[in-house]
Length: 216
Image 1 (cartoon, rainbow, N blue to C red):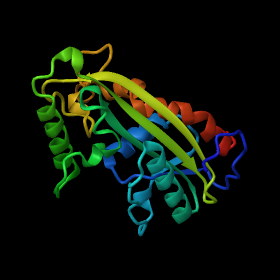
Image 2 (image 1 turned 90 degrees about the vertical axis):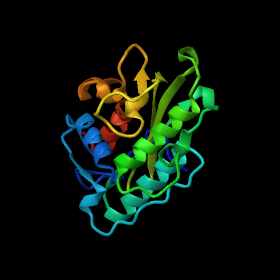
Image 3 (image 1 turned 30 degrees about the vertical axis):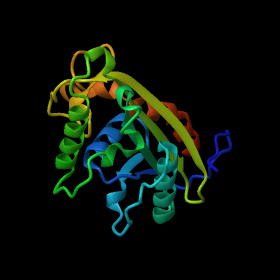
Image 4 (image 1 turned 120 degrees about the horizontal axis):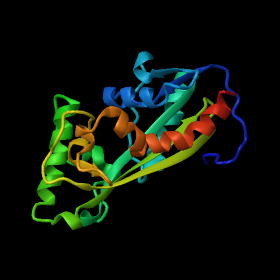
């Protein structure tokens, strides 16, 4: 079971490995963590690390599985996140299945992302703005090679747009409008998104754990 106590992990390095091969996510995570005096690298810097099958029933299960697998494979402290979009009009879908909402074989991640949000928009066709409420939820797991893991969560409330807008970000960013704004994540400046996103909020909640692990 993951540890949520204040027990200290025994860190032997100042390198944090991000357990993701998604280039957009890597850039976003590095930007949010840039103020920490540690080296943040992607697991793609370690050739031979196998992909982790995200078959958990919750964001928490998937984040833990990825963080522990990469920490064991690299011998470093690893950070993983699992996140998704919960749409109220769809009973919380796509949720943990957000990345695989529209099944198929795609030549690129951006092609898959477009297929996912186009399916979402088609399912919400005819749904009025007041009922298009949704939220991005993210769980971050921080694990050492022994498997000891800490968790943090972040949630960003908002609504689903009627059409995609913006060229930034990734995933469902072109169709998600955060509360208090009129533009989608993909149309907002990156620094604005990073100040309020579910991933940013989860990472901010994880900062005390990261500092403790690395004795900062």
